[in-house]
Length: 255
Figure 1 (cartoon, rainbow, N blue to C red):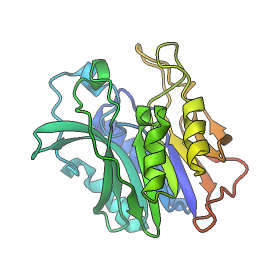
Figure 2 (cartoon, rainbow, N blue to C red; figure 1 turned 45 degrees about the vertical axis):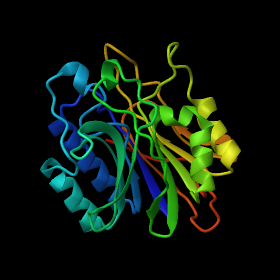
Figure 3 (spheres, helix red, strand yellow; figure 1 turned 90 degrees about the vertical axis):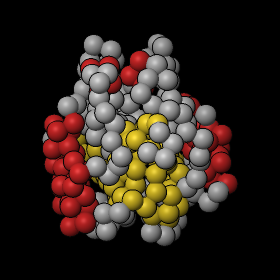
């Protein structure tokens, strides 16, 4: 199958701008035959939405604002891994999630961030406790959100529960404070024997320079494909049956 990583400048939003960009990226990915489309962390609202407006309300997802995006999911019959803040009305709290939409536009699974900083840009989000793979067609996916991948135990637990691939949606460039995540991502692949996909984001803000953040494909514990810089849709081929990454380089489509 062909997989697309949407390496986008979305951290400061606003949501309407982000959704328009996501719709554009999904179209590009689908027109280039991608069957899975992966977005960065909090792609809908933007990673810094709470720092920019602490009165922001996080909705139950999928909200009506996602209607156009989900119409594309159904029209192109693809899986969408969407980074979004979501409100859980039963638990009365917000989560930083990777929500996976099936080709019919319904939610087929979600992973809520376990390792949330709880302060600053992530003060709005509650730490989750559930770690289960998501079934996407014939494949079990171990989805993580950003810092969840710092602990390879999370990837290992996903693998032990049947995951065949690990996907991390991120807002994580190398920094002095947060370290270089590449080693952690490679360890997740190394200890599980699974391919590790990371969809990061780009853009420079007053809080963090994400232009040096890498979106990567890691196989057998070593980085095989890597990209950072201007926003783009990154396409590559993966064999579900063998678990092997077939591409030697990204097909890069600028936005």
